[in-house]
Each structure stands twice: as structure tokens, then as C-alpha cells.
Amino acid sequence: MARFDGWMPMRVSWDSSSPQVEWLLLGGRRFTHPFFEDTIQEALRHPFHHAFRRSTDLEALRCWYEESPGLAPKGFVFHLSRCGSTLLCQLLAALERNIVLSEPPPVDALLRGYLRNPALDADKRSEQVRWMLSAMGQKRHYTEEELYVKFDCWSIPELPVVRRAFPTVPWIFLYRDPVEVLVSQLQIRALWSLPGGLPTEVLGVQANDSPLDEYCARMLGRICEIALEQFRRTPGGLLVNYAEMPAFCTSGMLRHFQMEVGAEEVERMRQASVANSKNPTLPFEPDGDVKRHAATERMRELADRWIAPFYEELEIARRRQ
Image 1: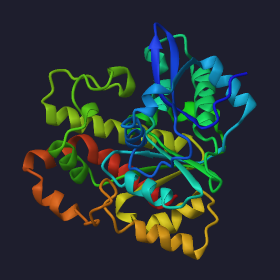
Image 2 (image 1 turned 90 degrees about the vertical axis):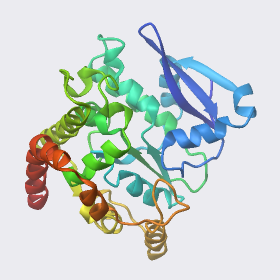
Image 3 (image 1 turned 180 degrees about the horizontal axis):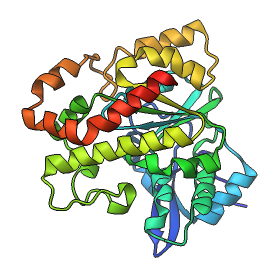
Image 4 (image 1 turned 90 degrees about the horizontal axis):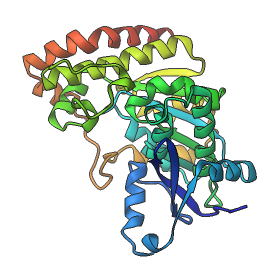
């Protein structure tokens, strides 16, 4: 049987309805950048990684899972976007014991495999995700003990698929004041927030010739709506408001994910919290007031109409949990 010691799945491509896994020889490199893709792209800047590549089908992934199960996930992070999830992952990654996968595209590709092959039901997709996270969670450094995964913001509808694969792993949903999130998205647009950037089937939001700002607000509201539904019916969840960050990471998160850390590790996480999560060379600066000040009347109206009703329900549920 082929072995994949030191190799990391970096991409899933599709040949008709059959997924192919592209592997990168990553060795002992840790995932300390804000996003999974940042680490992959940094490695790909070296010619060595273009000379040594592997591509397999999912059967090889399954066999590797059976031969060498990786670290079992310890916690999952779902989020609204622009709400502190990157900061949370950076604090987790500050501890060398943790493998932190922040929005890994191979996992997203398998979760949304039904778009390529409608015959892939939830059970099959959950099985494939289990294989993938096993390969990604292989110990590549002697310090590594625990695995954490942050999913893309549009992945919240797939929580039941993830729970099928890992029924006891605790999860959180992180969200933020609607006006602040909407301002952030409208200032620097994410592709998924534009019509056509995400298949309609993923969140069920039709463009319907909506203005771009309204479509973005509807997408954010839909994520909150689905998160609320999932929280009400899925065990193991915890709602977290951005206002609780970063203190949550050294208190509530430790309890929820059942992390046993010493005082030195807590201090290391606190030190990491003073840096800008997306650009660690810069200091963290609270921007809530700046974003609210930048909000136009139109932005406030859109946030109130499309996002706020679900945000308020999330807040009620959070206070009761």
C-alpha cells in the first residue's frame, strides 16, 4: 500500500464526477498562517514542491485512513465571516501542540461534492471528510497532539455531515454585530458575497437582480438563520459573539473544547492576541467603532432588514446556553 508520510492533501479536483486528491510534500511545516492556503502557497514558491507531487483517487485516501489514522479532531469552528474566527485560530496555532486547519479547500470540496455528483449523499460525504481530515491530521512534528478545524463561513449547512463523521466533537459558531460585518464585507468584498460567487444550492439565496449590497446582506442573514437552526437541533454547539473575543479564547474556548493547558500556554495565547490576526506583523486594534461610524444609512437599513432578526435570536440563544 502507498504511504503518505509527510504528504498533505492540498487540493481536490474533479474528473467528471470522480474527485482526485493532489498531495504536497509538506514535511514538518506547521500551519501558523491565518489560512490553510497561505501555508500551501508559501510552500509552492519553492521549485522542489513542483518537482515532487502526487495525485490519487479517494480510494488511496481511504486506505491511508485505515493504515494510519491521524489525530482525531478536538474542536470545530463555524462562523459568520469577519467576526474573529481568524483570531481564534491564530491563538490555537500559537500552541505547538495544535494542528490548526483554517478553511482548508480540500475539505470544502468534499462537503460540496454533491454539486459535482448528485449521487453523493450525506453519509458518503461524511465518510470522505473523515478520510480527508485523517490525512490532514497526521502528526508531522513530535509536539503535535490535537487537531482543530475552521470551516468556511458558507459551510454551516453542512454541519450535519460533519457531525455524522465526528458525532462527539464540540463546535462553535462565531458571529458579530450585523452592521459591523456588513460594513467589512462591503468595504472589501469576498467573492462568495457576490452573485455567482457561490452556487445558489449552497445557501439557497437567489440573486433575483438584487443590488450587490442587498445580496451581500441577504447572504449574511441566511448564514445566521441556518446557524440558529443548527444550534437548536445539533448537540455540542456553543454560540460566541465577537464582543467576547479575545478573552473567550483563554476561558470559554478552553472549557468547551476540553483543552488542558498550563499557565505558560495561556500566556502564549494572550501574547498572540495582541497581533492583527490576518497580518501578525501589525498590532491588533479594535475596529467596531470605526466600522459603525463608516456605516451609511443604507447599510444600517440592510443590516436591520436582512441580518438583525436572526442576530437577535442568536443573542437570545447565546444568553440562555
